[in-house]
Length: 118
Image (cartoon, rainbow, N blue to C red; front, side, top):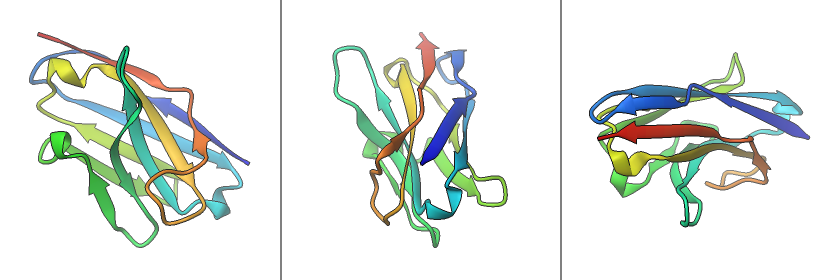
């Protein structure tokens, strides 16, 4: 099993930046993909960005050019640098990981709240 713990959420004004971190523990050798999803109230959980072993990444269209996903395998950690934040980015952000080179895996973190004020 893999455990994921997010940190770095909070309240920020529109146009500001936040950096989310997700540290993995447990059976970390089995992890291939790591990524971030978000869920706003009343909406479905959606992919924000993800990366697989080897470096390939994917981003949702609405964050391209503003968010950057990165991964430090030595620390078993994935990051999400969020710049030029907008009020519509307000959501609970979840870390996700999986053993296959897919953008969505079976392991989830508990989520961290990001609130962007206008």
